Image (cartoon, rainbow, N blue to C red):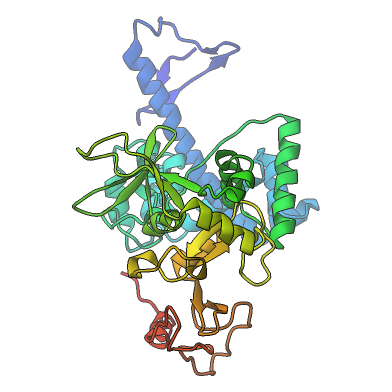
Length: 407
């Protein structure tokens, strides 16, 4: 029977094969049923807190070795029923709670659920703990996920969000055939690039291939890799891009990258005349010639990518860079992103040679400098004809290597 409640308000329950059983009809005593369900949630949270403390101890004494298991993850799967991903998350949260006493206490008292604490521990530090717990009070797990998204450890709830840090989670159920094709597609892209490819990059490549029309034919005809309709806030200059009926905020580098090589529909958020003929940032004839000149491959030394290439302006359009073949170069999505993120620099010397360098001035692929080796702004570049030379590079690198003190 489901008929007892102790002095602390925690309900004792008994179950039968069909679930909760009470001496009253739950439909006519909904308040009691609500109290009992809330009691279950509190007890579950308390058990999660107790488990977290146990997992930390299990790590310290290497409990799995007592059973002959290869790892603690195997112990968790066999003993507690957690799959590999859930086991990693449980251990991560348990470790985080060791230095977050207020968050651990909120979980133990049932003030926050494990799902909420899991999200909070992605960004909360001991010095920001109170602020985050106050901000999360009374919110659903989904609201907390939104609150955390785009923020880094040490940030406060009111700090600006970096769209580049926001991650979306896709949960897909596929057939065995589709799963095999997914693995084959990953292998093909990794063999082409010569390195491991994250899920995000693989899915983006597959989507671009679908949208571009089998990847290669449109490129040969000069069709741009992107079609964009952007909405820009006139006050804060934040930009959103439509995706599947939803406006998704994108970082500035994504907008810059798209505008290098896109079919532009124009502004769609103002009072201008709709229905204007779409234009390409690069004339189709010129784009097709550039892709043909570069043999349909990414021009970065050592890159094997030859599908879904994009065309980049060596001298940025914002600096007056023209749509000429001399100023255009084919790049894969990964290297194009690296250029606009500042990790890869492209210049052109007086002889017309395209020069690829890392952000610190090393030729692309060269080993990093030793710590005691002086940093200079430069590889060999003809300053009279180079399209871009950053004279403050050494100072910026030196500043970036200084220790960072967070709030």
